[in-house]
Length: 258
Image (cartoon, rainbow, N blue to C red; front, side):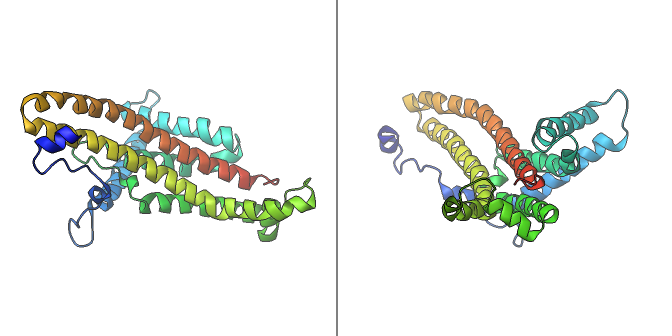
């Protein structure tokens, strides 16, 4: 890095949090907001096209739509909530998985190249929706008092343990769950995009210096290519983890022993 700084005159300015801030495109609408709106439109258009004329031998759109639906239904809803109980939550879980995946993958799709979920507001809203759903389910099934009683005072435990366990269980369910859902998704998208920007900007900087430094720019550019594929995997994985945890919380709320 010292060689790069010495050769660059003003030096290389590494990307940072400021690169995640965007001026309004028009009015109060920023680039991340546009990504969210366009992502929702693309998802709605895709599933409309996939389900418009269903065939016994599916076309490409129908096949992809069915594969995504089947993956979430069988691999998340049925496995975590149950074959019968899980079916009523499949539409929400499919929507959640696809929406997060699209907003994550915009970080590696030209010319967008920005994951909307690296802005904490979007994962926070999604986490609060899941939080509201599983708490509503628990209260509806067990009653307000019963839900919090079963949560904070699980049976079969010596009463002195409740002094420590009860506040931990309350904080875990009511506060920590939405916070961890939010931070896990946000920080993974933020960190991955930051490293990818560092490789791309660093390579462009070295290329602009000419000589041996321009030749050395091949290294960060190669890293950027490798990281792009890895980041795509992580983006889909984080969508899966967010959806899976939401399903697990719903399953816990559905259980009388929650």
